[in-house]
Amino acid sequence: MIEIKADEDLHLALQALDYWVRVRRHHHPSATAKLSAEATSDLERFGYFPGKTLRPDAPLLYLVAPALRIHPATEIVLRYISPDVDWTLIALDERWREKIRVVFRKRREK
Image 1 (cartoon, rainbow, N blue to C red):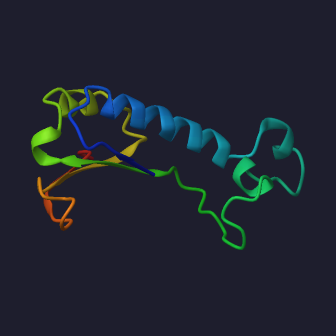
Image 2: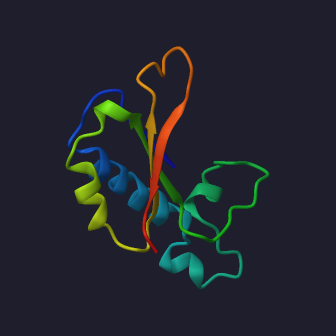
Image 3: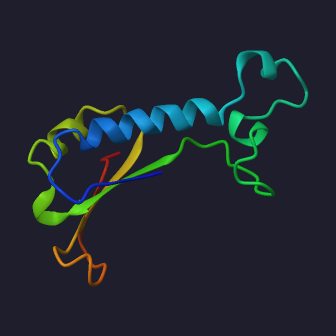
C-alpha cells in the first residue's frame, strides 16, 4: 500500500499506519470464516483483485513525498512503528510533477 503526500504533513507515518492496519485486518479471514474450510479474506469476498491470489504476508507500506516536503518528525515516528510493519520511505525530486525521480529510500531496519 502506498501513502503519498505532496506537501509536508506531520501525520504521514501515522495515517499510513492506520491504512496499513485496516488493509491487514481485511486481508485476513474473520474469526467465523476461519472455522470454515472456505475461509476467505474480506478483500476476496467483496470482489477486490478478482482472479488474483493474495499472499498471506502482511502488506508492504510505502510512504512517498517530495524530499524537501518530508516532515522532520516522520523518521522519528517511523522508529516507533512495530517491526511487523515493513515500511519504506521514498523521497522524490522536487520536480516530481514533470518526471518521477527518487532522491533517496529509507527502509525499516531489521
